[in-house]
Length: 82
Image 1: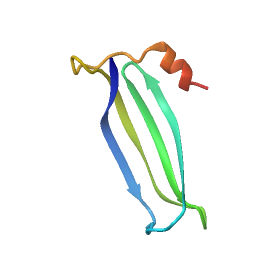
Image 2: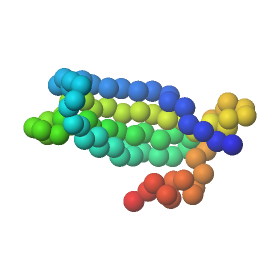
Image 3: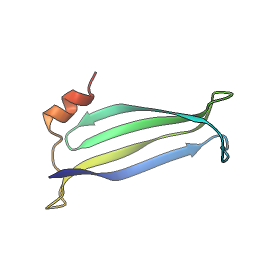
């Protein structure tokens, strides 16, 4: 059985959001290969559609039984590749 763990996370806050704000979250895979995937994101306040935060997560695929990194299976890469 395989799973993901967060290896690294970076968030840059640019504008505040408050409870009740409607937001839009945009995500995309920046790079995928080996046992890692880099997912970037942007969070917008719906109006006036300005970025409130952006950043990225680096995930590592692991074998849940051993806790060791495993190569990402090709069918997962194919599923998320454009």
